[in-house]
Image (cartoon, rainbow, N blue to C red; front, side, top):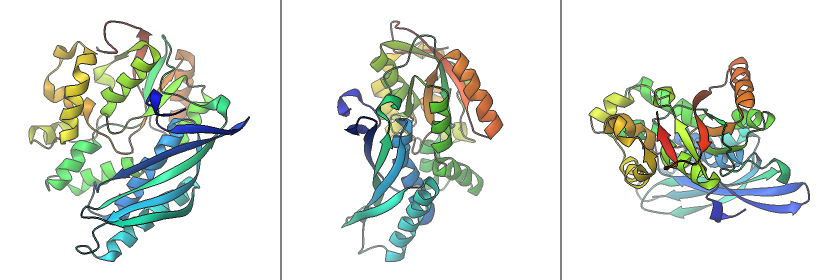
Length: 305
């Protein structure tokens, strides 16, 4: 599997029952604390492997650091944060590379393993499936509010906790419940990634607006203009693919296009398996919300109700 399917990672078979899952992701700082930023960046990079049904095993650091204007201790803290998340995920750091750059950036290349018969793709949802989301939306808007010095410590902590949280357990349960398709919600926002899934499968996703969860304070930040540019770019590109667009105000819809970092999984499962997933998530203390269903293809890939 390569880039032609817009899937979350590339997959290369190395044996009849084993394939490599390959991905890389680099981000700019979302929070002020360098250790937390490192943890978020690592969780974000690993997430692509989980979304494919794989198990991450090795990683390499990719750091871009303005050595002339920042203390080297900042880079040390970022790398320590990344290593903390890798240790939590059971991933072995095997190397990396640092480049002197004008803008601070950090990420990782990650390699995972997957049985070719257990790959979860983003383009195989089926009519009748239910749609489940495993994290609330809003970290892009909150990150903008942090840069604007409008976010409270409590809001920063909430967003950081979600972004540092691994998708490992949600992905393991997804495999146990025989998910038909999945992706992780990142830079294109919920509607962008849902649109990719629906178009890839030749179906329509019916999304129940009132069921889509948001982080605290998002509406207030939108009123204050704390909306990242990527949110508007996503809206402008994906708006034509959304039916019933005019039912809701622009402010109400903006979080649906908010670019997420280390967002949750968007999973399609049969109704029976979705019920099992929700029940088991509740029992294990995992976050999961049903947000819609899959229809045979309609006039648009996405439909809001």
